Image (tube, rainbow, N blue to C red):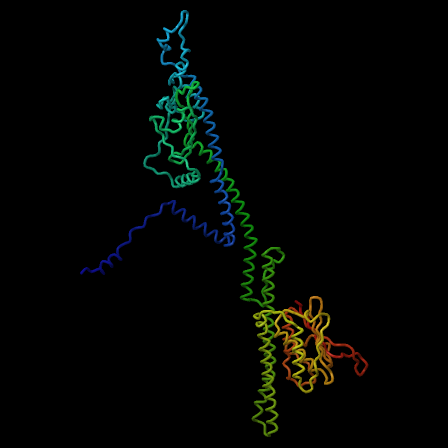
Length: 595
């Protein structure tokens, strides 16, 4: 049995094959890319980079479409083909005019000599077709072909009527001409950027399905489709590409004398001639693209800074608010801007102000709760500590009464504090509905009259200024009922036994007003605003600690959560013992937005 453990250990300890070293240019590109990414990440925010990138992508897509779908190439190919046709017709006419007879004697048919009449003469014009069917003389055509095609650099080939190659201007040299050819270096490869650029050019040129051009050399010219058609008397043009993807336009013109086809002239452009013009045009587009890209990058950076800068400051301000290094942090103010940034700044500042107001209210509430709970606890502690020292049953009874009173007071405070603390959360969680105040107030007044305790005054309900169906408000019926019940109980507690409590609902413009009036002593002027403060009580006719002082505070909190207002005022109409005007009672006014 083979031992595979040693083999695996040896394989693990064997040195790893050396990695292929990177070329210098590859290392340079990698280092340059890392440096560029580091600079961009430190200099520009993520939002700035995204805005610049998206704008550049749109511009690149536009330029790519222009380079790919441009009609300039088709127009250039068509115009080049037309110019070659015109040039070919001129050269073909010159070649036809240069055609001659192979010898000094014009051949005449001997049979026609016997047909001549006396005094007649034999003339080659009698056989006009034979006179015109002269072959092309290369010696006479070559100078003409070289002179006419030399300035244009167009390749020209002349074929006879059988398709055999007669002349090729690439093989025509004048006296003293020297031909030079550039050979590629031996054993070297082109740089990578040249290959890359060739691929880009081939991609940009690939917007057409052109056949491949092949040079048949000395083979019969009928191998070219245009030559075969031109031998039938037609002028033909074709567009092809060579192996490098360069466009070549070729035209074939029949060389004719009258209707006789003496041969064919084949003209074609050099490889890369049309592509050089296209590349020049594309370079112009690329130059415009670079300028537009530079302008777009600058404008994108400026636009991004107007967005990213304020957003970054707002984020830093929100982070400082979260950490709350100082007592109150401020969100940067961009409210003067009439855009989304300004709206965001205003919203964040309003949210921060509401948050600080809520925090301050919670702190005040906690301080008030601690203060209110401390008094009964202190009294309860004193009574409990004194109870063992009491010597008589009467003293113990009074101490027990104090303890029971303080316990009830604590229970009442804790209940009201619990109700007040969860009020906001309940109002936010509950769905708002439409409340019919006609039915709600009628039910509350009926219940108040039915469960009236001894000494409590009756309650009377009236509606003014509208039909019963007009008294509808949005909100939470349970909390509105709590407010009205609290106001009725408060008014009853101050009313004399022969008085009454009046509840009136009025229809105003866009509002519903609810008034709760009593016939009591009224409210002191300095207490008209304080009665809505938390834990404030002003009841001289009752013993201390009978009320928690949270009823009116909770009522105000509920009404303001419904978008309404509540205030207290005195009813005039009475004079005191000294003849001075005195309030005839208290009036609480609640206004809620109507549906």
